Length: 520
Image 1 (tube, rainbow, N blue to C red):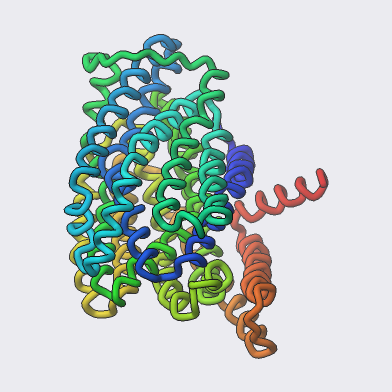
Image 2 (spheres, rainbow, N blue to C red; image 1 turned 30 degrees about the vertical axis):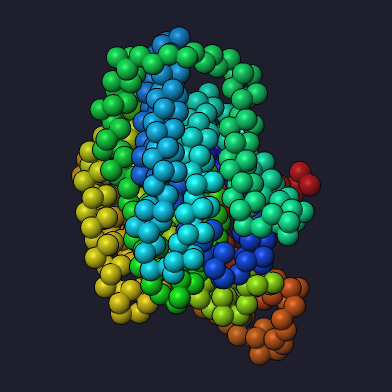
């Protein structure tokens, strides 16, 4: 099973692979921000592009990865590959039929859907959003297929290709923005994004063939695996509703704020936040989930606890300095990434405010993802479902309250508060279910990491103030230096401090750096 050093090295390798795809994703968003800023077309595109993914997340997304992988893994573990192939084919066909049905409904009622989601927008923006939505809705079909293929490949132990699938789609959109945007405009951008999702399906097919995957056109709903999936599906679906419903509530309320610009500001902030933080969270989650599923089958409780504990400690160690950097350096960071072309200083201010409040829930988000996967590996989807329902209601109430009190940034803060509360409840429940995951040693570790984060924040603030007082230019190089120098110094002090207070992950981090330098 996964040892601490091996696991962290594998996570580091996956982060390295995923990094290039994520950088291109950020570059894509930078080009979009530069071309459209926070104008009418940007508001319409931001609204329309998030709705198909909302329906996917609400209906299929997490259910595919969290339902499919444990069942498919069980067939592989028991040397029942033929049954596994049959189950995967039936599952894949069901995903295709269901997603195609959602697309038809979405295209027919696009205007009604946009009005329901973002009713605060003016009529011309609503009409443009509906037009773009009709182009983008077929994304759901290809997203469903791509996610299912990812589940199959990860079950075969192939993590590299799933990490790289967004590379092709991002290149397609970036290519369009550079060479064709001036000719075809915002509607062409929607078409390019759709083509990008098609490419995510196509790019995985050669790897599936290489691993001997055999697809069959069959629709046997009485299949043993489908029966198991059906039992797990509904509670997992409801558990997955937290993030998409939170997002749609935010869009609805944001459409009434800042003349609709809040929709775009929240979108840009959320994309950057999810892109950077998601690299670390999903690298850890994608690594541990198949292992957790196999361990549960083997009934090895101690190894199960070790992997969960390792994953959470790794997430906390990695994300703590990232959270501090995001909160303190939010303005120069957003300015560095987005501020050019139509994206002005006012756009930077709005986006940075949302970005800071999203970042407060960063560590809680990582813990939530890991514990949810632990419950799914135990074939317990009911518990996360119940907690998620409470989280949805709580977030909606807090969103309305904070949006009324402090405006747009209140929506991002409500999301962070909701995520923190859900994580706390999940921690309490899973520790009661499997005693030993969170003990006094873990609490002590968490307190030490809090002290390390506070120390790192003081260092970053000190360096940032010195640099601001020395020179304040608006060039790209200076912006990069203003973000990079305080961040680098802060991380160095963070590693030294955590090593001084006896955090084991710091020693592993140093060993990894040393090994990379020796290889170099």
